Amino acid sequence: MKFHYTLFVFFSLLFVTGCQTTPPSHFASIYVEAPESSSRIMRKNVTLPVSGITIPILGKELTLAEDLLNTEVVETGESDLRVVSLLVQLNRTAAAMIMDVTRQARGKHLVLVINDEAVGIMPIEDRVVDGNLFFFVERKGKNGKEAALEISRELNQSILLIRQLEDKK
Image 1 (cartoon, rainbow, N blue to C red):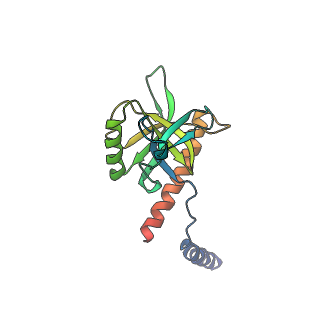
Image 2: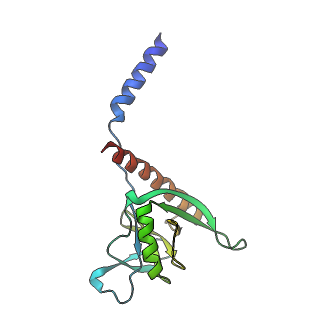
Image 3: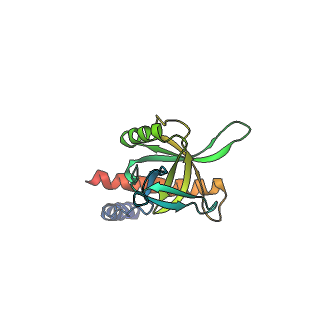
């Protein structure tokens, strides 16, 4: 009988606290490197935390946190030159925007920004047609794989929380 009471209390607490969702804490956006012809007003500089690479980006993001579907840590590149990357998968709307931008921005970079901090870079070698973006990511005190795993975990938790909040609307 005590077991049934414990289950009842557990589910009651779950129901009561389930209505209160923890807000997401990691908001990711993707920006494109600004062309040299853009005015200073239209762009801002961001710096990657480990390499110190500074990139001028356009001030308006291409994607918002709610445009992300998933992230995964993957290895990319030729078999003898494999590197760890963070795969960021986008919804259809954001993928269409990225496809348009990357068609025109060959030779530039996409920049992954989390909470106003640049954490990753992706060279634009060709038009991205599938909404799958492969970023080289950095975090102070972490190697590439550790940084990618940590960022992926944080972003996937926020993606889940954002979906839960959107479902409640």
